[in-house]
Image (cartoon, rainbow, N blue to C red):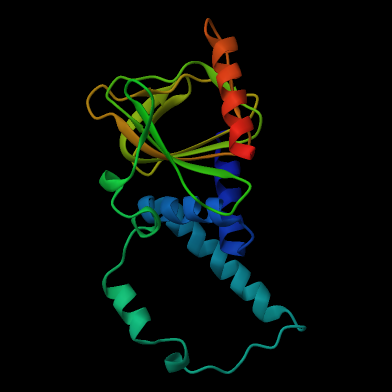
Length: 209
């Protein structure tokens, strides 16, 4: 699942403007951190722009460049902020919730069906073997982690579906901070799988109340 095609689909959907708020923030951060992904996005935007100009049913307005620029635009361009900082603020000032020792998360308040979270894992901490009911999107913001499928550093993304089972382990040297989207609840396996799944169910029940 975590291949080039699915990553490019995310980039194309972002360039097309069809993503919801959570995935739009995720994709824009990915493009800001990953230069290769940003180049692909520019290619898609040029393609979509050419298609737009060829559409006889759309009549672009004749705008001057001054119609599109104001002092706020100029100030934003001269003092660019990454999307995560713009949305969350300073990550050190967030009210992180400890799920278990060495693993913290912060759930974003965002009007979207997808759940957007920040995840912080201390060096060497792991997540038990699990899968997902829907897709899971992970973007590394700081540090790195590895699982059965590879190692992921700052600017790397991993997109998983229900067919993927993995055990993420944070770098023993740096730990990691990730931006995460889950479309549906986590499904745990192994010795404590039943207990963890019950905990997840109860947590999701109260979240819907």
